[in-house]
Image (tube, rainbow, N blue to C red; front, top):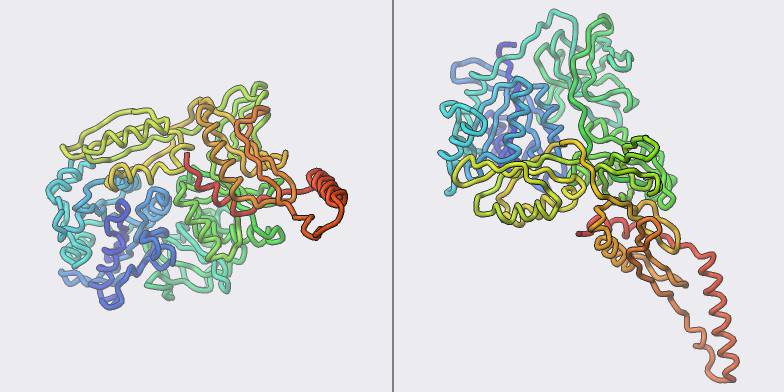
Length: 596
C-alpha cells in the first residue's frame, strides 16, 4: 500500500487534462506514441466535441527515480461546469489532485471551483501550469494568480507542457513524493464505496469501487448496504486501457467487481459494499446529491416503446448518476418521463447518448426550471413542469431559482459582460480585481434566463476569453406568468412555459411565428394562439390547403360550379369541427432553440 498513489487531474475546460493523461500514458510505456489521440476519451461524443464527458480511470505502473516501483491510479475528469458531479465523485477515490492551469488563459472560474472541491475533500493539491511551450504563455502571472486566488505556494508549482512532454516526469515524481498513500488495512472487514458503474448486456451491472478496508476476490459474498441484497463475486479487476482481471483487490485500490447484478435499480452511486459475513459494518458517507438545474420532458416517438425508454433510463443512470427522472404523461405526447439535468450542455449530451448508445427514438420538450409556487390557500408547490401549475386565480406569488454566478473576464470586456448580465435580469453582487488584467464579476441571475443561451453569448461578447461557474443561491419572488400555447382551440401542454411578464408577449409572438412555419397545412384553417390565462397575447393562422374542385369542370352551367364550391365549403366546415391537428416532433425540436 505504501507504493500506491491515487490521484486525479482537475482543471477548467480545455486546459489540457486529456492531453496530459495521454502524455503520462506514453511516457510510462502504457501506449505507443503513434497511437496517441485522447486515449481516455473513448466516447464518440467526446471525440466529436473535443471535451471530456465521463471521468476515466487507468492504472499505471511507474518506476520512480529513487528505484521504487509504484502503482498510480489516475482519473481524468471533465472540465465543464455541467459535469462537475463527475469531478466530485472522482475525488472520493483519490488522495491527491493535479490542478492544471493553462499558461495562456490563467486561473479561470472552474479552476477555482474544482480546487475548492478538492480542498473540501481533504486532497493534497499539486498545482501545475500547462502549455508553457506556447508563445503567449504567462507563467509568472499564472503563478501569482494561483498564490493570490487559491493560496497555493509558488515554490510548489510545476511547469509542464502536455504537448511535448516537458516536465511530465517531474510531475509524476511530485505525485509520488507529495500524495500520501491510502490508509486502511487489508486485515479488517471489507468496506468499499461505489463511485461509478455501467451496465454490460452479458455481465449485468459492473460497479466501480474504491476499497477502503479489507480485500475482495472472486468467490466472496458481498452485501449492498442500501438494499441489504447479497451477491457472489464472479470477477474483480482494475482499469487499464480496458478492464483487466486480477486475483484480488486490496485496501486502497480502485477497481471493478462483476457479481451478476441484473437489475439496474439495485445499485446506486454512493452505496457502501461490505462483506456478507460482516453486515454490521457502518456505511461510508456517500456523495452529496446532485442538484438538478434544468428539467425537460422526454417521450418516445413510438408510444409503444415507453417501457423500453424506462429500462434505458435505469441503465443510463448507472453511468450518469446526476440525472433524475420520474414518470409523467402529456395530452399531446402521451406517456414519458420528466428528466432533471445539471445544465443545458448536460441535457444535450444526455439526450444524444440516449439516442446513440441506448438506441432510443425520443423527443424532448422545452427545458424549464423548478419553481416555488405559493397558493392563496397556503400550499407551497415545487413544480418543474409548467403544465402542472394551478389556475392563475389560485396563485399568490411565484418564486424562481437564483444562481450565484462568478464570471472571470479580461478588463477590456467588462462592459459588454455586464450589459449581458443586466439584460438577463442579473443583480450585481460585487467586482474583484485579482490583478491588472482581469476582473471577477459576481452576479445573482435567474436560472431560467441563464440556461438558454447565456454561456454562448458570454463567450461571444468577450471574444471567447470569459469563463464562468455557478451554484444555486435560493429563490426570489418574480413577476412571472404561465403562457399557454393553443393549437386549433386546444392547449398543447408540452409547449407551455413560464416567463417574466414584461417579456412574455415578445417570446409568445416568436413561438407562434415559428410554430406557424413548422406545422403543415391541413384542409381547414388552424388558429395558433399564445395566451396568459384568458388573455391572448399572440395569434397567427395557418391557412387551409384548397383542392381545386373546379378542375374537372371544363364547361357547362355556372350553377354546377357553385354546387361544387358549396359542397367544398360544407366539407371544410365539418372538417374544422372534427379535424385533429398533430404537432410534429420538428416543432418541439425547433422551439427548444428559440431566442429571446
